[in-house]
Amino acid sequence: MINISDKAQKHFISLLSKEPFDTQIRVFIINPGTQNAECGVAYCTKDEVEKNDIKLNYNNFFVYVDQSIISFLKNSEIDLVVDNLGAQLTFKAPYAKQNILKNTVSSLKARIDSLKERIEKFLDTNINPQLSIHGGQVNLIKISENKTVFIQFSGGCNGCSMIGTTLKETVEKKILSFFPEIKKVTDQTNHLHGNHSFY
Image 1: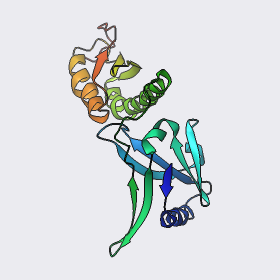
Image 2: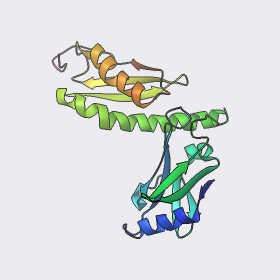
Image 3: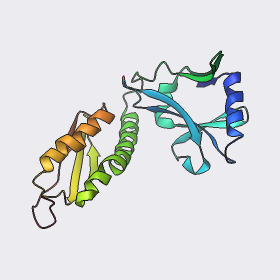
Image 4: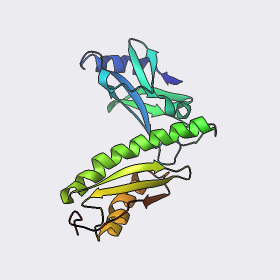
């Protein structure tokens, strides 16, 4: 699945020897199946292993990969290139930008579930800290098959007269920027203006 050269494997073993016990390697793809796909390699501690991970065995170390991106890693290669400037890992994944998953209900659901988790995390780390300044919050309700994100505001955002600007300029703009596969963001909040509303 992932062809790691002998030089790269030795390099990983050397790097891992300086990390805490049980630290392994994670291979990931951001935005798989899109033109913005980016491949990466990172350390993976024992408590960072997810239930959907697949463990690949190499020479004295493991590589963890989320099973939802396995298809995108077909014929991928990791190598260590050494030149006059030093050593550098290279990661080639020719299928990372191609949507090669079979169009089945199960594979589609797996991709939507994975995307849902990533957007939920994005809202918690990139949007809600900003909204919480005004006592507000936004939560993901669902993602439709046509890649529309349905959200719901609460707290100070519920009934706020500036909610249209918050939706378009803060929430939708950032989601569409970070998740190019998403086509639209729709607010499904039953807005009731009151003392809780920020404006």
